[in-house]
Length: 206
Image 1 (cartoon, rainbow, N blue to C red):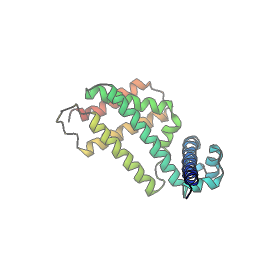
Image 2 (tube, rainbow, N blue to C red; image 1 turned 45 degrees about the horizontal axis):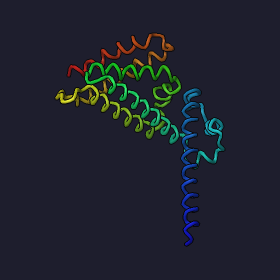
Image 3 (cartoon, rainbow, N blue to C red; image 1 turned 30 degrees about the vertical axis):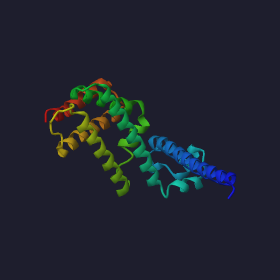
Image 4 (spheres, one colour; image 1 turned 90 degrees about the horizontal axis):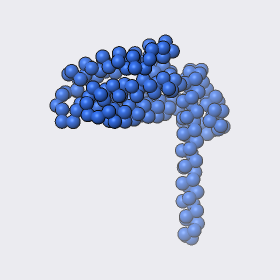
């Protein structure tokens, strides 16, 4: 076979996959905003596609139904938030208390700065389907693992493997965030962080 022809086919194939990936990302980004603004239950495929600037046939190129797109939006948003939190904690040094406060500050500041993402992560995601609930559970487990890792000093032998305590602290932080959101972020973020730190402090004392 002619090597030029082979190269063209390979290039063409790569281009097709790249464009498909780009369209998928456009849908995820558009859906994140649409779901965050209007609510998942009040948003259809057409709304998402219109926001992405794509026809509906491209939706089914990447997703079989809306729940799959919601999961993709949630996983992307949760992963990015975890990365921001982890980076903030690592930049705070080796003190578990300092890392805890830095992680909490990054978390609550991000929720305030990105209210549509906050609504997607904490409000619109619950009670949709077992598959969505599974994605939530996996993200929460990853966050718990982050907390256990970040709240322990290098070489420290403190056991933070108590899953019940980790789940309780994380659940409490989430409920503080939900209350804060319901009050339109009325309290200063520093005050919210201090309140949440009282919970996370129980991990530091384990």
